[in-house]
Length: 539
Image 1 (tube, rainbow, N blue to C red):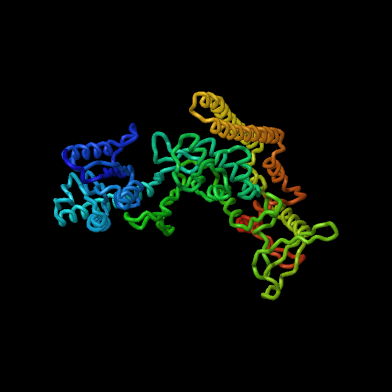
Image 2: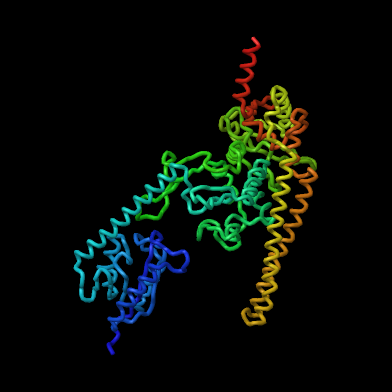
């Protein structure tokens, strides 16, 4: 029997661009590579295979592949001294780095390298250095050519309004008949609408996330996992039991996809040899409007953007922003004014002042009482509304009955989904005891899992109780969203002013003095043009 001299690793790599069979856990190419190496080893009894490393779905242009790094660790530890691959391109396609491993790294560790189809064996130097170099250059050029063709094809698709992303944003899914088209995913789309309306209502991102978590709504990544939908791996938010967060809410509020507009190509890699994403200039983006059905109207999306740009700090113990946050500016220096609370004899008084101060050249730094400011703004708003000839155009879309019905339906759907998850948990709990009896689970594992599923079930039960109360409030027209709508529809007889009214009607408020303010209303230019036209026609 021939003496074994080499402890070898079979290294197999398949790029994600290669053909794969969806019906198998491994691609056919991986199996074929393994079969070829095994056939080779039958005639080389001096080689003993001690391990096999497979990088399935990794490009050969980069060398930070997990199985490749494991192989190098074994080489450095002296566990193996031979590497066998199907051909040189399986080791790598990048010319310089592949040459470095062949000429420097492997020889330094005394490693024999064999590429079967390329007839390369560093033991007997079969395959001269020029041949190896040429094959490496060809492999590198192949990668570059594929990269250029792929980028070009994607750019053509993006320019035509086709969706080229791997995973649709929360609220959409790929059309079953055309994967380049996004269609609305009904349930998450209703959650997206809720998020936008809650933001417009004045809630902070933190408060919105907390409300969704308390209702038992699954976060985007958890929803996709629960539904068995494709989702990013090892990326943002991909952690076990991920909850809604302020960051997730802001990402949704900033995503123009919800208006029916696709903006693609914002980031990319400098070239085919680098993975690091860089931001591309805006003139290189691909922007296509009305390519799929919108979840959010352009008006509401723009309104949410306006709110996000403002300074929307909440009160220390509150969940809504101050009524004038981000809108109130100093008439002298233009800086945003700051709210200050002054306690006096068991009463708290609220003031606004310019933080710039007289020392820095601002002469308008006198404080103005919040209650006086509210009264002044209210009077100005009422005067403005009385001059608007067609108030109905402002509230044409506010169908209270329809919105109440939709909101109640959304809450009912969420309760049903919670109940379905609850039934699944109950089924799992019922099987835990049997698994412990059969020896599948230890007693400690049984107790731990039972406690976990009991906590999950209690959270869902509590969430459904909250949803039931919310639904009852909606149907009796006591829900907060319906309350502001009723208030907004009666602006002609406005007796008080809130954040919702301020955001909808006012662009900015300049405080010139304690008794003088200047308000710029939304659509101010259109209003003035209409008034001028009416005056001209009257003349």
